[in-house]
Length: 491
Image (cartoon, rainbow, N blue to C red):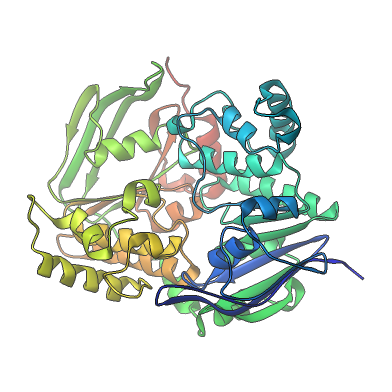
């Protein structure tokens, strides 16, 4: 009989008036990949936080290898063999990747010294075996979210935990990296470890999981082997209905035939290191069109997004931008919301002009965003930091879609969203594009399927250059090849 390495029973956890867990159960066995699914706000991250020692339950029990335990904190979880890869990054920005990996190790035998040579050797070995390549000597503050996510995963793997818990690890990884990561997870499970995985893409879950648990409104509503489940049954368990009809509409395309609203001509930009970030970038985007930009992270998409949203000045070339720009950033926690502000104040960040916003109007806007975009919170007075990651994303997306009267710049807009919310955001982007006088949209996404299904035009970012994809080559295979074979970077 397969050994149960972790068992949580009847777990309850509240944050003020918000009940995040209402009697959740989870049982994880050695040798399996166990996926946890649920809508945004269903309690997935909270449940994993309890298992990883980040949160103490109000009620319920935790057993590790059949022994009841009290998770007094993350250190205790580590001692019991639980390694948690967080949804929100826990890295020290000013330190290098290597130094962050060293901090994540158990250094008790070497006192306060960080044996960086040993850490480098182990990290290099892990990079080769996992395919999760990161620049070990680069400061974390200079990395994009994809490299930061890879660093978080490597940091936990450095300790080789028997119970590995990953909260949305694939949200900012490329398809090839997801495939490599899933191969690694399967390998770890085959070695006798237990792997717990939270992911929002049902096809990913069905591809890698041995068993699946579904949470709804803080309670466990389903646990079953993968062989007994399909996409339809999982969606019904998650949301209580079938959203297949909603998902099918995502492939509808809207033609953009309006006037140009933004233009980049010969735009160039360098990193602080002096290396080229952008080289002779040229694009023009029209009202009513969705211009999708695909690319492997680090090839200039981030810089294009910042220039188009008016948050970074180009060093070379011409930049013409409109007034009404909405910007959905790649990292919602660092750039999208202020955790210590309530929802009204966070909405005001996007709308208010001058030092004295009309708070009554801002409250009405916040209530409208909550209602239209399904933000789950105790009310508009709730702090943004009390929301789940998915609900923070809903708040940011809702605010910026309303702001985007002329141009919407969206970096991975559905990162961390469940299937129903993802379908809704896709519909909203298409709705905006289809409006009479609607804005232009520039979609920069690591999800190639998202780019191909939503875009009226597709470009690839490679080596700091933008390449137009001919209409006859807009397939996963052809676009993926362009992403990898595009122009070399000029230094």
